[in-house]
Structures are given as C-alpha cells and as structure tokens.
Length: 278
Image (tube, rainbow, N blue to C red; front, side, top):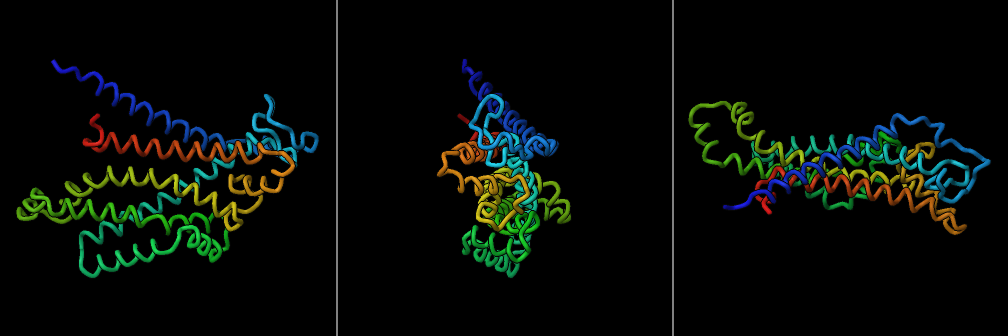
C-alpha cells in the first residue's frame, strides 16, 4: 500500500511555518505599536555602549537603546507596508478585473498604465511621489501604493480572462445567470486565493522601498523610529567603530522581509494544488 504519511506531514509542516511566521510578524508589529517610547528615549549616561545583556543591540550616540528602537522601527515599517500593499492590491484587483471583463479600450488603457508604471524605476517614482506629497507617512504610503500594483494587475487579469473562457462559465451565462452571479460564484472564488498570495508577496517590496526612500531622506520624518532613519544615522558613526548601529537593525529588517516572503511562498504552496505536491 502507498504510504501517504510524508505528504500529510509536509502539509502540516507548511501550515505550522505559515502560522509561526504570521505570529512573529504580528507580534513584532503589536510590540512596537504598544511599546512605551520611554524604552528608547535618550540616556546620555549610556552613550555608545557595545551590545551586552542589558542592551542586546547596544546604544547609539544619544544613549538610546537600539534593541527597542529597532523593534519600534520595524513595527512602523510593517504597518506602512501592510497599508500600502493593501491599497496597491485593491488597485490591482480593480484594474485587472476591469481589464479582463470589459476588454477593448479598457484593456488597452490598463495595459498602457501598467507599461507606463513599469517603465519608470520604482525608487525614482517613489521619491518623486513622496516629494510631491510633502514626504512623511502619507507620501511614503501613497508612493508605495501607486507603484506596486502592475505585476499583480497582470496576474489578476490573466486569471479572470482564463475563468471567463471556461466552459462552465459559458454554460452559466447561456442559462441566463447574471454577471453578478457569475462573478460571485465563479470568478471571485477562483481569483481570491491568487489575490491573497499576491497581496502577501507585496509586503516585502513595500517594506524595503519604504526603508529605502526613508534612508535617502525622502520618506518619514527624522523624529520617527524607522529602520531607514536608523540606518541613515548609523552611516555617520560607522567609521568610529559603532558597527552595531547598522548591523542589527539591517539584520532584523532582512529577517522580517524574509519572513513575509516565506509565508507568501508557503501559502502559495498550500493554495496551488500543483505546487503542493512533493
């Protein structure tokens, strides 16, 4: 008899990794959101301390605890990434669906917008939008949101076009079912899993681009605990041997981005029955 236990174990392992990754990400976000700012306030008697048990990530030139400041900064990045990716994914869902459903001139306009947005480097477009909106959280969120939808738009457009041409959808249409019924019963259930995976995979890009434009000085204000600001400030002190100011915040940012990417990849494995077979 064929032993199916390894497949079962693999799926359980996959769900465990997804749950653990999501738990860590939500936990870090809430920790930073609810943290008392006093934890990373300046303490001039503890300036420029190396990493220790009391200060795992050391302290900076103002005596601020880099561990708590990094957690607060990563939490800010996650919040901005979730909001920006959510808005961007909704734009992609609307444009991709309209393009596939109506076709013709609508499809042509959407494809032109996609090509136009993808023809300009993300970072440059982000900076221009952020500057135009006066910087700050609003500028960063808007910039990230309006520049990260093209790839997901193409995916959704392809999925909707595929399901529209399916035989059972054509039969449903010939039976007199309304467009709303077809969308609710056939199109949305088919597209929604791909949309969720695409949304989660947008988070790493949103977080990294937020940190990037903040690092360059076009994003969040200097008084905000953000990873981009922490890394930007650390550049002035690396030559003095304060390596921990950049190493630990950068490492935590990479781990958070990797976790988002990991959760998205494993979720896609669970949703897609072909990729889930091992």
